[in-house]
Amino acid sequence: MSKRKPYTRPMGPTWWASHPYYRFYMLREGTSVFVALYGLALLCALFALVKGEGAWNAYVAAMSSPLAIVFHLVCLAMASLHAVTWFSLTPKTMDIWIKGKPLPEKLIVGAHYGGFVVASLVIIVAIGGWL
Amino acid sequence: MSTAEPTIKVEVMRYRPEQDEKPWLQSFDVPYRHDMSILDALHHIKDNCDSSLSYRWSCRMAICGSCGYMVNKVPKLGCKTFLRDYIKANGGPGKIRVEALANFPIERDLVAKIDDFVEKLEIIKPYIIREEEQKLADGAYKQTPEELARYKQFSMCINCGLCYAACPQYGLNNKFMGPAALALLQRYNRDSRDQGNGERLPILNSEEGVWGCTFVGYCSQVCPKGVDPAAAINQGKVESSTDYVLNLAGMSKAKEYKDSRKQTEQSCGKGDCGCGGKS
Image (cartoon, rainbow over all chains, first blue to last red; front, side, top):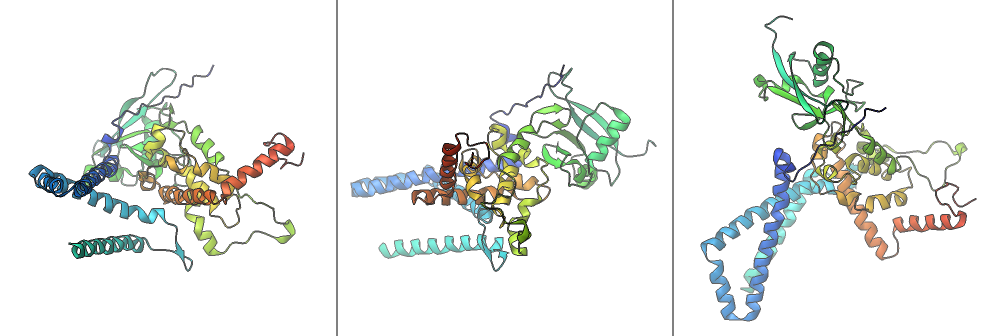
């Protein structure tokens, strides 16, 4: 009779906590929660803007509270981490060959940062012009 | 053995299915030499301390893929990992824990049950598929160095399973095809001689295919051969998305293949017989 009895190790909900690589992965994925929250805050701004001057002023006042400023700083840090980690992964998602050689990873990552800077400048200039 | 010889503490996971309910750790003091690998330490234990210890190994040169273990919770090849990197003098923790590869059931001691992994390697059709075979008289299928370079990296896999031990998605749900199988799928899809893209796309497109991956990326970190399965999978997501858009335009290769299968099944009534609808 076979004595085989393969043992499957359990994988609990805290599987990620025991290893630094997995912990950083969870943080990286967790940044999306803060990006979503900031998106909601922006959406609220849009609603307030549509509603009228009173609503807009109330929104601005609410956003000036120390708690709201801390919230924005945390969101900024999380969004930055989100962007940096994503940019660093982008070469793995692309299979671009030019003249028989794969496109250098640094070029792909650099192009993303370049695009990020250009897009930011365009938005800043556009908003500046609008104001 | 002189008493002055330095030793290092090695904890080894033991699991003897005929008498143990669950795995446990056995500790050994192994004489340390600068050139000793984890595999050498296991050999020392088996030869001098406990001959009942079971572990897989073969080539001792990182090409057979047999000696994958968890070394201090990190998937490693036993032959390619050295005691010297774990001693305190070199900034290491001073002790070593060797366990069976994570995310696989344990057969005995350090022997992981990798049947599921091997089945998945077969599922992705790891062979050149031709719509029409070239005549023998026409000679071999030719390939330029560039065409070879397009898939060579993904062909370096030695099926050691370290990437599966590193993949939490596979650990949480082993229906996921996993890193090595999907990298192997890309290896054939990228091969200029292969025409089986449409046949493999349904596997690639599925939830258990590339979309089961959340880009943890640890598979590529632990790969001892630099295959970079995370790149293979995430480039597969681009291909899968492209096929989705092509499908909306009625040009999906996956659908083309499925339709041709249906026709074959209708004409011979079986489909899986391999007759190609001729019987």
